Length: 582
Image (cartoon, rainbow, N blue to C red; front, side, top):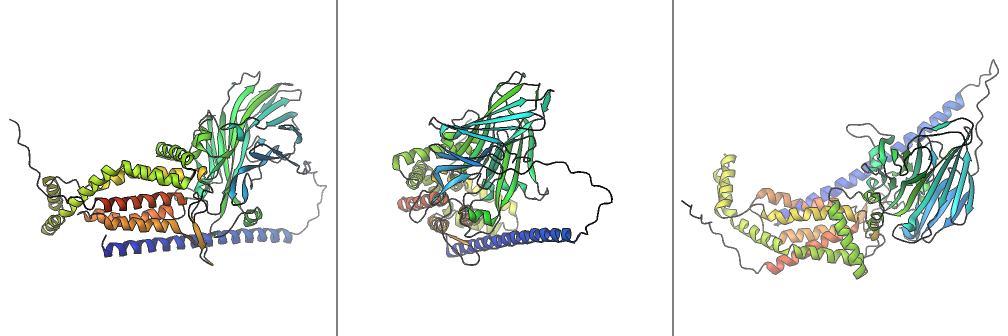
């Protein structure tokens, strides 16, 4: 790349960084304005109520419907080898699940459903409503039982059994057994019910909102941005889906998940022994600053609101005769989104990872990365070795592409001559340029072939590295966590993060481009000039492992160009046409 090209790319990078800074500032202003408007609305409502005159009733007031007094919350913690479950009598479920071997931030363990008010395993007939009803709670060895009977004489008993065996998934699995009993004298119909998954929230301040959300077995991932207003729709308060045959549903943040899976039933109602869900529900809520910092999270560099997502799986309706019971079991997984664990579950729960279009590539890369980590003991070294291995496999193709680009470079003067000659006739100019390529046996797209092959690998890495919980808290040089941006500093007053590895990656890419042969096609040259800008946009606020992969790839390409520059220069000869057969 010549001096002008380097200047153009540098200016483009500066424009991109400026735009990112402006966008963050605008988001911060919008969030602050929204908070001020909400506070003003609450204050205005309070003032209006205070100003209302008190009017004496002319007739005796109708007695209000008696309401159940608010119950006091009682919590009990039960510990297994990997998880500390805290149960609550309000809602009759798991209030939080503390993962003993996983950190949210350095020195602080990961806690699932940390900001949610709905317990994991809460059961209601309407999603999101009545989730804090009081239950009688009994804690025994390895199990917790909840019991409640409502005004209809419908008794609900929930028994949570904690894992005792150890294995790929059993460590994080809790069994919940629901038993509905009609204690009344008349038949009773339950018009479907919802089992709540609790909520998912970001683990770090820098986590992207698109990684927090809800998913069921047959649908796409509903992330926190789904609820925002868009170009073709207004803001959506909730997500609902009525669909039979749902095998599971769950909420997830970037690296952890809570999954609810229906299991066998015990009934004499003619219902299937292996039931499936019939509906799904999700709703977003805002995590306030006080709640965020009050739980030990860092708010450094905050420029946008933080969102969490609640979820629930709906089950079919059932009718109980007087004195009859119905029992339904569920498995609840509260743990890391580890592909190797989730793929061993029978109902396809590994889809909660949602790798995207290149999921096969992502899964292959993740399995290879974990295998290399087992041999090397470092995920950073595993990424480096995996990158070098792929580059070695592509070496012959890259070398052939370099030679083709050099031949294209030799055609540069002839192409310039054609363009000058036919500049007023674009159709003729393109015809003559293509004829020139054909006469000298040059493929103008050969220089792009290695890039086209590497694009699925890049997107496979992109989809995998952003969700690989295995990378969490893995260190390399100045990087404290390969699963997070390698922020070393926040600019004062604006909170703009200074991330080093994406900048190093862009410099190595410019170095590689300066050594690469220049194609004779100006369009390709202009497109290549913006590649560093595109890649820095991908990497800047992403897992630093992605920038590490691209940096190693660029350095290998630089070494390859130095090693092959002494090869015999290609010659430019016209292709001799073979004689036609009679």
